[in-house]
Structure formats: structure tokens, C-alpha cells
Length: 510
Image (cartoon, rainbow, N blue to C red; front, side, top):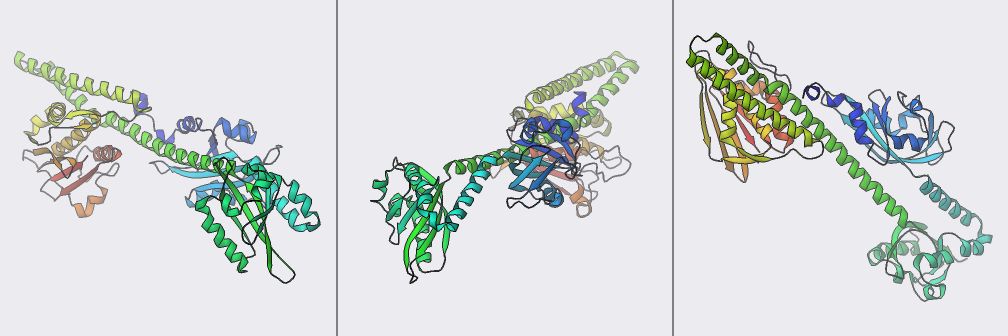
């Protein structure tokens, strides 16, 4: 258990790398200075770089150059990771052309996200995939379109032998001519298509938008239009296409026919959906990673903080046993020692079990009996209860809840130990513990007659890390911080009410 309690998972880059290694995209992690501190195997393979060419390189020292789609240079401050590092904003599906070392140009789709640890350390998590084939295909399409516009004398040959679908459409929508690519795309013969209109082969939900653009073109509001739309294949399947339409006018300026260029993008659409799904999965992975790191830190805190009390009780019982002069005192001390040791061992065993399955599953819930757990916690704090002559009053209208037992034990231990610590001199503490249901929620309250505090002054700081509000007490300011994290981690909330000198009351909504 000690290695876990001594480890700060927020600073463990290798732990983050182990998560990133399971992702199919290339992953690069940079620190707040923009220096690469980790990457996965896929990143190295996509960029075709060695480890020493990536690790500890800043974004300005990296062995690659980047260009925009138009060929212009991408400066270091324009890189997605630089923008995320500077602004904190995520960058999605940024297309960059990258020349890494002596390798040929590759086109990448890049995403970047900022990760912050609870210590406010900042990292940038960047993922990318190789979209060279897609970009080259789109560039080829654009070049083909430009060529057709510039070479009217070659129109007929280009029309019939073009690799993209082309059609000549009447102003009423009838198909006057189609090329072989268009026929293959939709599964019809040329003769079958010439008996149809574009309305007949358009997916019904996309027809209204297409007709609206046709109307604007005929009314000379627009000269051309481009539209992603769906066609209906002869088999009934949906075919996605990028449609570019131009209107040809006669010498009098009257509309003659439309020239439609139709590039099938069904696979591109599938790729885009796949990329979107991968981004969603990545965000889920990041969220789960943050949650698990937070949970592991809580477990470490439970060990270091909550075990101190029982360990101190064991020490005092041993001292009492060794110094007692009569057998009755020795027997009493020995029986307390056995009970405290047994409870402590059970708690530690359960924590070990939770940690063993924690990385693969959610924290296990069990049926938690409020009375039994409160009794166990009070036994661990028995020495303080006896010394201060404390009264523990319980009212468990709700006998039990389904909850992680180790969390509920820790919550009750911290709240009760606080009530035992911050008391008036010479006034026995009275601690009231109650559980109840209200509006379909389960609640736990712990209140006392202790010192209390000024909520207007300290209320916002009450649950923060290493904050204490009463001098002269052995307090590290960790207990209430742990309680809040444990409660909120499982979707609950905790509130406090207090007045100076009149005690404090905590209410937890599970």
C-alpha cells in the first residue's frame, strides 16, 4: 500500500502514456513549455521518426515543418498545440501538411486538448491520424474541376471520361446526359438515368434544399452552388456526394441547362463519423482518466490520513497495557486493542480489494449499515471519546444505503474526529449523527456543539486542501477536503452550517 500512498499520479507522465498507448491515433503529450514529454508508438510510426527525434523536443525545435492546405507555412504559434497551450481552447480536426525529417509530405488531422492536474500543472494532449489519401483525393477533385472550367474545348471528352460523376440537367430537372462515373455511382445504365429527373434520384429529405438553390440560380441570385447531398442508389442504398452545380446561359443570357459535377463522398462521410466517434471516445478516456486519478489520490489520502487515528489508539492501548498495574485494566486494554486491530485490518483489506479492481471497474458499492459503520468508527476514536466524555447520539431513520463502504467509513471518521477535536474547554462534546430520505435522495448529517466558525469569512475555504481555521490544534487541513472529493466523486454534495461558538453541522446528499 505504501507505493500508492507515496505516488502523485498527476505528475506520472508514464501513467498517462500507458493510457495513450491503447489509442489507435498518434498521441503526443507536451508540458506547459511546449516540450514533448511523451508519445505513443502510433505517433512515431505515422511521423516516421525515432524516439530521440521526438522526446524532449519543443514545438519550435521539432524535426518537422508544417503547411496549410494552400501551401503556406504554418508558424509555430499557429500549431494546434500552441493555440491550446496559450488559450486553453481545444482544437478539432485541424488539417496540416507535415514534412518530418527527410520523409515525404503527409497530411494529418490534428486534435489537441489541455489537461490540468490538481496541482495546476498543465499538459497538452494531441492526437492525429494520417489523412493523406483523403486530402490528395480532394485536391485531385479540385484540380479536375478547375481544369474543366479552363478547357471548354475539351469539355466533351472530359465529361464522358471523368473519374467523377457528371450530368447535364435541364432547367426542369430532367437528366439530358450523364457520364459513366455517374452511372456506376448510382447503379443505373445511361439509358435508365436519361428517363429520370434529378428529383427522382435525390434522397427525399435533401430535395427541398437542392430545389431552393436551383431556384436561386435560375433567378440569378447565385451563379453556382455546392452542396453535400444524398442520392438513392438503384438498390435503395444511400450514396453521399459533393454536388457542384453551374448554370450555362445562351447568348441572350437565358438559362439553358445545368452542369452537375458529383463526387461520391460516402467513404469520407464514414471517415468523418469515425473521427467524430474517436474524438468522443478520447474525451471519455480523458474524463475517465481524470476521475480515476482523483479516486486513487483519495485512496492515498484515506491511508495517510484516516489510519493515523486507529494507529494512535493502538499505540495508547499498548502503553496502557504495559503500564497497568491490575489485571482488569490490562484485560480491558487488551480487548480494545484486539477490536481496534480487527477493524483496522478489515478496513485495510477492503481498501486493498477496492484498489485491485479499481483500475478496471467502478468503485464497488455494497450495502452500508449506518449503525454498524458508525460503531466501527467510534471504536477507532474511542480514546478521544473517553478523554472528552463525548456523547454520540444517533438517529438512523434510513438504516442503510448502497455506497462504497471504504468511502462512507472515511467520511464518518473525518466528520466525527473533527467534532471531537474542535471543542470548548471543559464542555463535553455532543455529536449528533442522523440519516434520512427526502425527495428521493438519501442524506447523512453530522452536527456538534463545538467551536464552530464564521461561514461568511471561511465558508468558501472550508473544503479546500490544507486549510485550517483554529490555531493550536493538530490539523493538516486534509479531512474535509477528502470528504468533499469522496462525496462529489460519486455525484453527491456536501453543505455546512455554522455559527462561531455554536458548533457546526454537515449535511451530505448522496
